[in-house]
Length: 364
Image 1 (tube, rainbow, N blue to C red):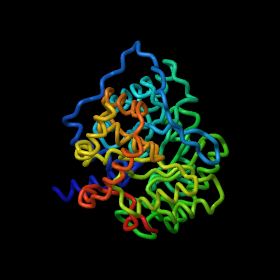
Image 2 (image 1 turned 30 degrees about the vertical axis):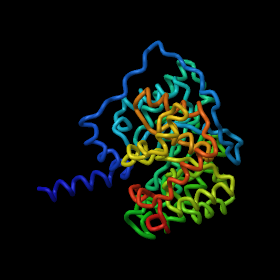
Image 3 (image 1 turned 135 degrees about the vertical axis):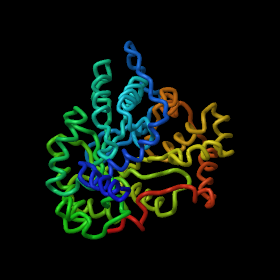
């Protein structure tokens, strides 16, 4: 019986429109058995002012300015509960935030689109909202990508998105497969061919005004350079995990992007779902927080922003959303910045972190 159930489950996942996204969703179901849903936004709430001292990142190729502090919508219970997703995004936009990060894998485009529409009806201008989404590797290839663009826009109820990223360079995040892993889903002879076909399709969508900027996520340096060599849309953003404990190969990627005008967007800027708590009680960070009257999470976000990163922390708690937005309200001095950066020298602590996109899994 167990074998039969497993076979049915594998078949269900394989036949779903987003197999990896379905795995994400299934993994979240135990969390949904006991969680605190995001409360509704009051019907009479209107937009609060945008934060003072807000920082923007200029994007090559378009001149668009990307807000440096956004809202991540992945990898927590409230990211897989449609009402909570809707309420979270609406709270965020009405409290002054303007950058929303989502993805095909997260399966939450529709509630995000509804929240954006509601925020606009309450007075938030679409021109101020910066929407980032990602196309998963299972939708790579010329025909798949052509079909994905209008589907994505329909789900979000938008006529364009501000940034689209290639989510991973490999199918199944590089955990399975090989050089022929894209043949069955996408008709590509190799991962590189699939990435390049997808980039060409998205570049055409950019020329047609459906996408304003393009970028990558979890890509290695040579994979970024392969896309740049196509001389289509520029690679304007690279999203990667970033905090003081990143390994040297990740820092090398970040430095390469800095040298080539590619903006860096940090997911898990607080250490990730498994380590955010331990990061928050680090003595150095707690001390700096007391110095500035800020929480440990605000200190970590501010360090990342002052390090040139765009951050997309995720939370479904309206008070925490406001705290994250208020990370603009203070400035770390040089001594603070250096002290936080030195935390990365603790290699034992660094072993606690899990990283996607390393050379061992993403090469091809």
